Image 1 (cartoon, one colour):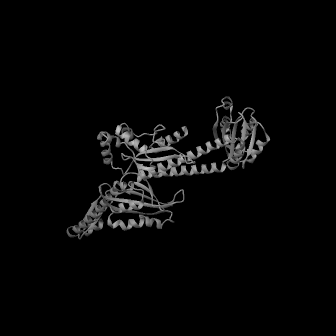
Image 2 (cartoon, rainbow, N blue to C red):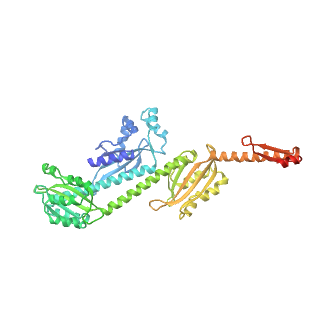
Image 3 (cartoon, rainbow, N blue to C red):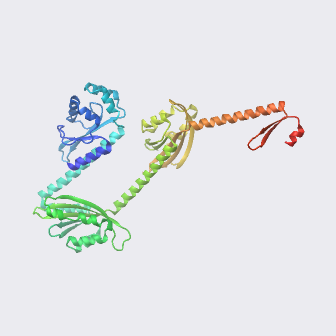
Amino acid sequence: MDQLYTLIDNWSKCSGMYAVIVDMEGNRTSDSFGMTEFCNMIHANENGQASCTATWKSDREGIYVCPIGFCDFSIPIVLPDGRALGRVLAGQALSVRQDEEEILQKTTQLGIDTETVRDVLSRVHRKTEKEMEGSYELLKEMIHFFIEKSYSIWKTKNDLKKMPEKKDRVLSQITQIMYSYNLTVDLETETYSLITGTGMERTVQEYQKHHYQDELTKFQESIIHPAYVNRFNTLLNFESARKDPSENGFKGSLEYPVLYPGDNEYEWHEINVFIDTEDDGTRVANILGRDITEAHNAQEKSEKELRAAAAKNQILSELTKMLYSYNLTLNLRTGKYSMIIGSGMTQFMEIFKSTDDYETAYNKKIAYLDPENVFQFAALASLESLRARTNANGFIGNLEYGAITDYGEEWHEINVFISTDEKGEPIANILGRDITDAHKRQEQREIQQKAAMARDQLLSGVTKMLYSYNLTVNLETWKYSLITGTGMSEVLNTM
């Protein structure tokens, strides 16, 4: 139960949600993990407490809405043999779609002060349906896996106690399926017996040459990386188990690198150690070993890829915050997107945050575009157009377009890139920013240039009608330009 409590407590901390274990009658059998401020307030109210307790005693399963309006879920604790032991109740999450007024009406009926409720609700972190479904599925899978694992261990131990003559056969089968060897060490004499599986032939051959644990320790110290030797020896030190007959069960595990004589690359091995008491009172340690080199290298590669992806996301995030209003990463197969947010483009940010479906966001956004730019925008950024260019790689185009939003007339720019993600999925990166100020400055410059041209044309016309010349002198450089009319030929020739 301690392990189950730790599992649920860690889930509660990660998800920011509440959890508790109840029996089949709805009576609490564990502490509350992550009780929210809002639900503490409800439970402190007599009517609220009764309302919540009634849902605890119901036999509902899955995701549901509690009487106050918060999202909860119930996961049954059922053993593989069909026996139901209780349920894990979790949630206390507020949906982004939940109407606050509806909650206020229900809490008012319970006799709770409205302003107090508003104050507490202002601090409640709302979750999307996707986040709540993900949290529910994760907790359900964790509990089911934990129950199956725990039940299997319990049943195996139970069967072994009932049928000790089958113990060696069971250990042999486990070793042959999962491990390279199983060493059974007699803690009194320090002698061992060996059951072998497949793999780690050089280690097994060495183990077959000896009879005592200390001989194996010397061999292991000669091949284990020095940084892991102390941890290996600590795990295989059974002094406390010799002194304490009640010390039984899993002692620990260790992954460590080894380098055999003549090899240039390390292998990775794993041992799992269990302490047990035989039916005749003999105290033993079971040491199960296996080669995990391939799995370790695959994990190392995966971690490097994750670190590289995280570094890329960090760079994208910083660039977006400095230069853009948003960077939208769109999965071209599913039509779903994720987003890094900078600043600006308030109207479109509200649209993007309201959904993760690109078609939905696109149709809402297109309504604000200047009609003259809609066709160009669709050709570059509609889902249909992007999917048609799945095989493209890199930058495919950009567009400046006008938009009439609730915040006034704006000018925006998008830059579009096509690529694939780490899983090989086709994606589009759409980077958008507000260029209203820059567009206005450009318009101003164009107006000034047109005014200057009109002024020069007017001066030229006036000069030709009234004067022989118009000399414009730069007082900084003393250079001049000249517009000529008629007359004063000798002077003009000099100029």
